[in-house]
Image (cartoon, rainbow, N blue to C red):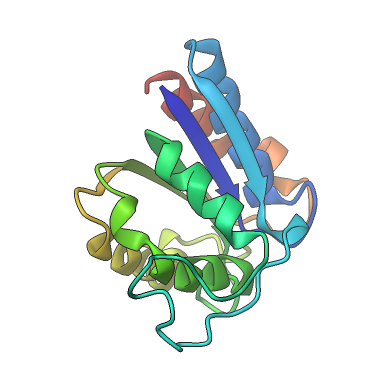
Length: 176
């Protein structure tokens, strides 16, 4: 299977990105083809809500989102990772989600894993972020949530290396 991880973290090597890497490591060890997209390295402009995409399912903006959308359509499994910012999803991930408008119905029958990291140690700190992810998945035909990885209580870059979520991410990737 093709397994895609989309890292929303603006911080290279940030805690949520590290969990993406662990998830993909497990998936690769189980023989799956893996790919990671770092949204911070892509040029993705916000949606204009012009609905120019409605007829031909192609966005009027010419940037890296077309490549991200194609990778999502080609994947069987997608892990979406975001740090929690002000108890919500990060801007990079939200921009990507909004730009899926061009052809979101083609992202069909995918299995999703959700990865969240937060400074707050309580899992409830991710409630709104998970609601954002789940709202997105509700729009995708046949989307199935298979698991959530909580990297809560991780503020500083590298905190995640001492967190049980590392093993959880690896195991979830391995069990695909």
